[in-house]
View 1 (tube, one colour):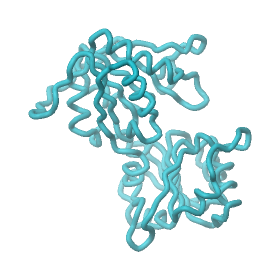
View 2 (cartoon, one colour):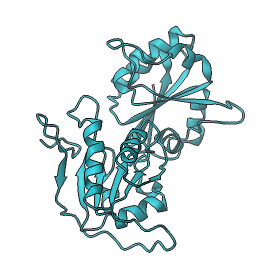
View 3 (cartoon, helix red, strand yellow):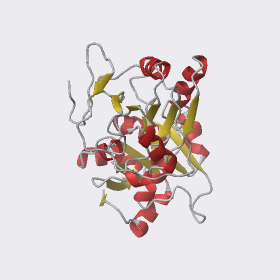
Amino acid sequence: MADKDGSKINPKKQEIVRLERTDRPAPEISLHGLPEFLPGWVWLTGAGPGDPGLLTLHAVNALQQADCVVYDALVSEDILSLTRAEAELVYSGKRGGKPSLRQEDISRQLVSLAQENKRVLRLKGGDPFVFGRGGEEAQALVQAQIPFRLIPGISAGIGGLGYAGIPVTHREVNHAVTFVTGHLAGKDAPELLDWGAIAQATPVIVIYMAMSRLEAIADLLMQAGRDSGEKIAIVTHATMPEQRVVTGTLGAAAALAAKYNLQPPSIIVIGDVVDLHSELSWFGAAFEG
């Protein structure tokens, strides 16, 4: 089954699908002084929020040397085009509400490929250690005695908001920020986060993976004392040409998402730093609710 975003998952078996390379050869990029990618190693690598220009040099170096690239749903074709023509591409994306691989299966696949003496690049959107389950995968590699390297990436909560003209901190606005996943919130599931503490902790809250639970999260924050009129921004497809930024209020957050038909991937920020968007916006389409 091929999804519209290029995802290829067998919905019955939920098995990892290996793709044949049909694209053009990757350009030769000289990266002197960067480490050699040795066979049998796994490099856990952050691909950033989407714009290929936000890849680190270490990430590009890894893409140029890898024998096998195990990549997530949010990794763009432009980024994958930087791999060697001989590299094997293995899709292992996890998307909410869609058939997805179990994390245990992905970790086992990384171990198995490394045991075949391949140079395995695990390519994850954003940063592997920021809501990316990179820590779990690293633990699995350690347990299997597979050597690994971590290559951090730019997280969407920082880089994506930067492309939206929203600084997560500003000397005249806030000196602290909370980053949280919205994946665990919802009226139909037990609450695993202390939203009361989150609401009171810092002036600015940045929420990942929250679109499907936005109404519940807004309600929880308002019940904990956040003002319904507090500014909010929803940024979709951050750093990409189709980026959209919608601003409004916390109380109207779910209505804004419905009005503009906002879809994941998205990043949400709550707090007075949103006011800076109108002054600092420099990239993508912006709308005010």
